[in-house]
Length: 68
Image (tube, rainbow, N blue to C red; front, side, top):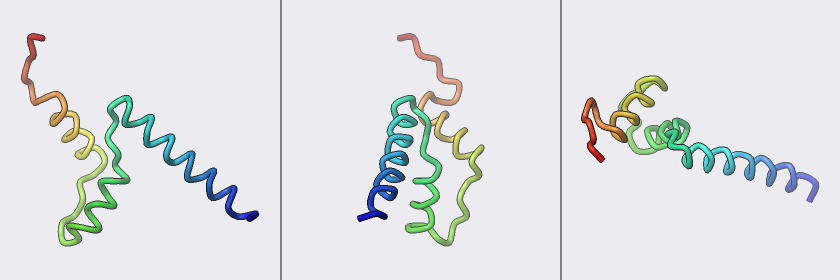
């Protein structure tokens, strides 16, 4: 029982951090790395900078203006 509480606290903190990042639109690089290792082990993952740039482009478009 003594180990369960600190473990639960770490899980809660990690979940809260991930939720807050997703709420403000920050991509989850750790989830991306886990996905790449599990499903595409033959491909090297993008760097954090390349991943972040790609996510911003996917979200807002590359130079595409919006009128509304």
